[in-house]
Image 1: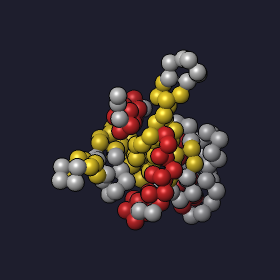
Image 2 (image 1 turned 90 degrees about the vertical axis):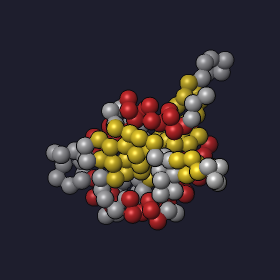
Image 3 (image 1 turned 180 degrees about the horizontal axis):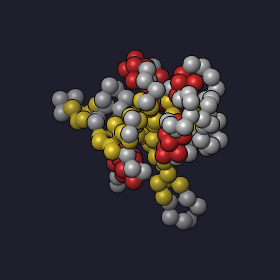
Image 4 (image 1 turned 120 degrees about the vertical axis):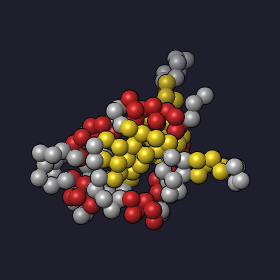
Length: 157
């Protein structure tokens, strides 16, 4: 059986991200420790830095709450090019059929607490060089965030 972290790492690399696991095993406490208390994987593509928290599908809301309460996460989000996403992994499929792993992505911070389909599409639109104002800057300033329907945000919030 594979871990949520290994599945997220494979997913990110398949999407063209340069990614590395940054959580570590603490042999004294006998537990895994995340970087800054909330990051399992760091990924980057161009100027975009992505902090990923990988978990089971049933623990997504607990991880989002943990990140929202983290001072380190607030500092991470001060830059519009640093994003946080929670990957929730679960098996889905028809009854009696083979079940496949499915990743639920929940973007965290500054009005982005919602599901968006496709890290690639979201980030490519979010940092569109043709846009005069970065949507991350718009959303950070309090304008409306992208709709949770799975559509990518417009160039201007």
